[in-house]
Length: 176
Image 1 (cartoon, rainbow, N blue to C red):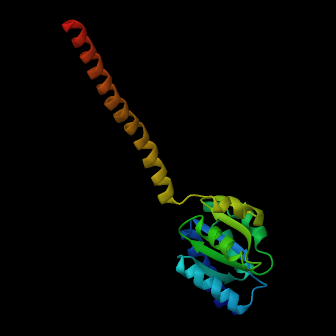
Image 2 (cartoon, rainbow, N blue to C red; image 1 turned 90 degrees about the vertical axis):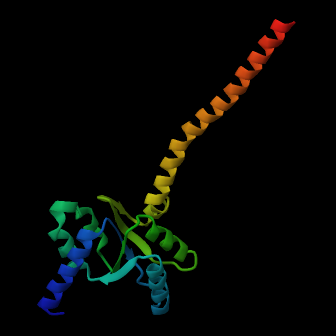
Image 3 (cartoon, one colour; image 1 turned 180 degrees about the vertical axis):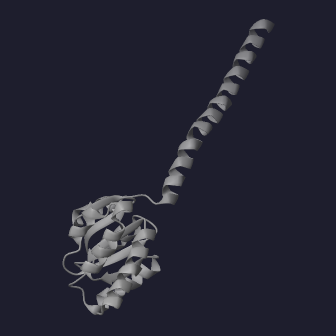
């Protein structure tokens, strides 16, 4: 790889890292070519971009953005074979990795960058799978907002029946 190729690769990675809110660093080294292609296909179907990277180039790209994003804890993840999963949703790659590992031993999660938080190690996969998407969170908020309103409507409806019953009882007493 020539110097120009390296600087071009660093620039491309720098652009991707600067735009990405979420990305995962994985190791899929023991997978066969067919298995890697299968994993790439699943990534593509879910809107995840998988890119195999040279560790030194990825670290240099991250270092050029260090002041903005705090990538330093990720440097240790770039040892041995590395691939990066760029995504727009935080939990999708974790769910895909978990699903793929039901039948394969890899990819292994080295690290994940989620909105300035760094999750290091494969043991973090369970936590990352549990993250909710933006739409799931919006649904939860809407449900929470609807709950008090529906309780109020129920109370008003039942209260109306109680008032009608009291009026009817008073009316019967007065006529008796």
